[in-house]
Every structure is written in C-alpha cells, then in structure tokens.
Image (cartoon, rainbow, N blue to C red):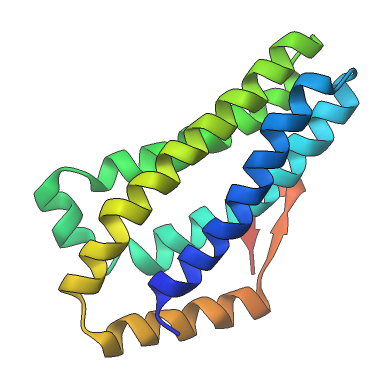
Length: 157
C-alpha cells in the first residue's frame, strides 16, 4: 500500500468524524460532552499529523519548499492541535463549542488541500517504490505506536 493510499483512507474516517462533530456539537449541553468529543479528535489527529510530518513531509520537503507550502502544512497541523487543546481550558459551553467547530472546519480545509494538491503531487514526484516503502513504514508505526494524552498528545514510542 502506498502512503498516499493509507493517508487518504484515514481521511475518510476523519471526514465521518467531522460530519458527526458538526451535527452533534450544536446539541451538546455540557463542557464535559464537548471535551470528550474534542479529546477523540485530538488523539486521532495527533497520530495522523505526526505520521504525515515524520514519514511524508520529509521525503517531499524539496517539493513543498519550492512551492512555499511545507511550513504552512506544518503550521496547520500545529494550529489544529492548539485549537483542540484549547477546549480543555474553555470556561464556557459556547466557547468550547465554537473551538470544536473551528477545529472541524480547519481539519476539513486542511484535508481538502492534501487530497487535491499534496497527495497527487507526491504520486507524480515520488517513485512507486518510495511510496510503498513509506506505506510500509506507516503501517509499522501504526502497529507499534500509541498516543499519550499526558504528553500533550505527542506520539510516544
């Protein structure tokens, strides 16, 4: 499996989660409910972002640097993480709900960019063998990695 296929497959799961967040968030009544949903997103996105940053953006760095997009992609990962973490400190349901919906919108825009631009670029620039090798590395990481909430959702190995 190519890494682009693996990352796209994860995006399908995330799109369903985002759909759920967007329909559920307006109905949530307590900070605990919002924080629980945000925590689920945070853990899932942290593992995905970390895999992309470590396995995918590295081999593609020259292309993204040329386009001026590498730092923007990394910044979007960090912004999504910050937005989700901010929900832990939110003092009211409206603020937490707004942050959760902002995170969902940011994730949608980010995934759209990756699906329309980043992954097709990788498939044009990198050799199939490289994409498959990165896909195997992704699978190995997925089988041997967990996300640690106590470490601010950094991926612990």
